[in-house]
Length: 573
Figure 1 (tube, rainbow, N blue to C red):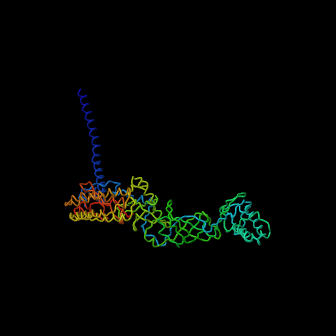
Figure 2: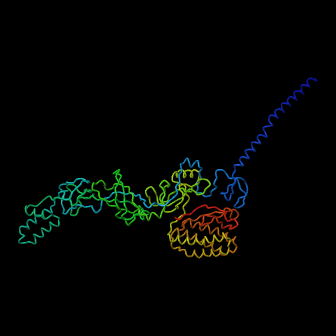
Figure 3: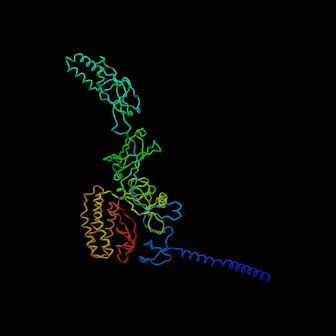
């Protein structure tokens, strides 16, 4: 019994010893895991960037307060490195830029020796066209020119005609010739009848001398050239005046080129032209502009330029397509800028380019819609949307557009709605003057000057009454009346308020109205900015329009002058 009890104690002790050993083996790993986690946490904190939710341009290596607004910094989420709120801007990594072989070029003015690239075709000189017509009625007995394209010379036989009327007239002449001494009037009348049918004096003399009427009269070519049309066949009966053949002399030809409205200021009569024809490879022809059509074709919105040149060898044929380069007027060119063809994502006259965002911390490109004009060689003139000195993508533009589209941003296929309504320059000028008064309201709020703000708002009302609403019709008029009402209401409220906090509250709807005005009708100012303060009105945020890119916050004034960011740039269009 004692032996059995002793064995039970020994077995229990053994189990206890094994348990302690297992616990000892396991326990050292726990503090190591904690140490590793601590080390990774320290490393993560060391690499973490901190930013301000209101001012994403602020990025610090440690937590703290925003140096602009004093708010607590938050961790910067990876993938949103720049924090830009402009939906038109797409950011790329340096690696992606290198793989896409993206290259940029600074926009510059056109050179004075530019060339305008136009297309057109060869046409016959209209002054060299001639019609061979029937001088008397009759039946076509024989054709000596039976197909178009045949060359003929002056006096060459084209056809013979049998004319019963002409046979009768000849017999009348022969009879009148027998009594011409007695009845000279009848003889002269018979002669005149044949002359009216364009018989020559030699033919008439031959009839009289032979005493026999000619039954088959020859139709002769009155001009040398190419037969372009044959309107008769053997056996046809023709009347006086019927067009039998059309003949054109191709020793001189016209080059007709299509020039769009925007091209016309660049060209003038006398400008040199060089062109090539698809049917004559390897040869370049030269000429000068001799005529510019004063009428625009309503279907193509183009006018014709005409050049004339000799074609002695007949190489240039009517309807040949040509590609021409016209030396342009340097005075007109110096007023515009040009970009390479490779920079464009083509979508008609209003096309897309990508502009490199200056001074960005990370490589960023802004999608910009521009208005293009004439094609000058491999360059396009830019009518609106770009300024000289801006840097645009000239290689790899499609790669940026595709990347932006895949990222869910704006692209050529997914552009923001265009609110712009075309109005006259006079109306735009009046709106610009009105906007200048708005800027005075904004600047008075920036200076915390309530009295000056009241006076500036009253000036807005005065300037608003001077905008001629009769200059806009239809939808443009309706839209302007809505915007006008909002401006009138907001400006009126500001003039009634003496407290600057209340003035700022009404400044927000006034700014919204002026932003709508700018987006819808445009201004004659070269550049204005849409700016945003996220902290205005208890962090609800508010926008304003500014003539300056530098942030000067009208909602806080001197207390938080630099709070805000530019969200959009409006260029003159």
